[in-house]
Length: 235
Image (cartoon, rainbow, N blue to C red; front, side, top):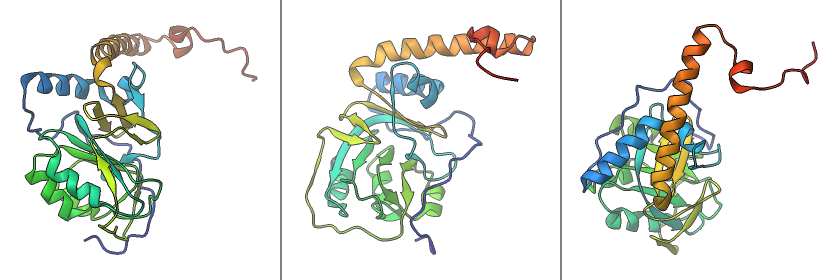
C-alpha cells in the first residue's frame, strides 16, 4: 500500500505516451476493431465528435493510463465498496468498471488487491467518481485507472448498491455496454447506439485537423483557418 497519501486531486499529466493500450481480452473481432478505432481518435477528439466528456475532475490516477473498453456499471453505497467486489466477479472479460460512489469521494474504494483480482478476471480498467489508493502498485501493474482523488482511508464492505444498471459518473449517464475512452485528456463516453456516427465524425475531425497542421506550418494562422474575428480584442 502506498504510504503517506492524504486525499488530494491527482496530477493532470501533460506528457502522454504513444497511443497504445494494454492488450484487452476481447471476445469478438468487432470489439477489437471498435477499440482500436476509438483508441486512435482519443478522448478529446471523440468528446468533440458526439461522445460525451466526463467532468474534468476525473483524470488518470497514474501517468500513461489509457483505457478503451465497454462499460460495466457499478453503484456503491456511500463509503462502501461491496458492490465493486461483486462487480469484479460479474464483469464480462474485456470490459471496464464504471463506478458511482453516491457522492462520497474521500475513500480508497480501489487499490492493489482489487487490481490483482480484476486482472485475473480479465477486466480492462476502472473509471470511478471517487478515490483510489496504492497508486505506485497500480502503475506497476499497468492497470488503467481514472479517478477523482487519491484517498488513503478504506471503504466498508457491508452496504448496498447495484451492478449493471445505469449510473451517473463524472456528470454523465453511463449504461453497461457504452464505451469508455480514457487517456491523458480525461474520459469520454460513447453511447453504444451512436458508435457508428461518432466514429465517422471523429475520423472526419481528425482528417480536418491534420490538414490544418500542414497549413499552420506553411504560415497560415488559426484566425484564418477557423474564420474567427479578432476585432473584439483590444491592443
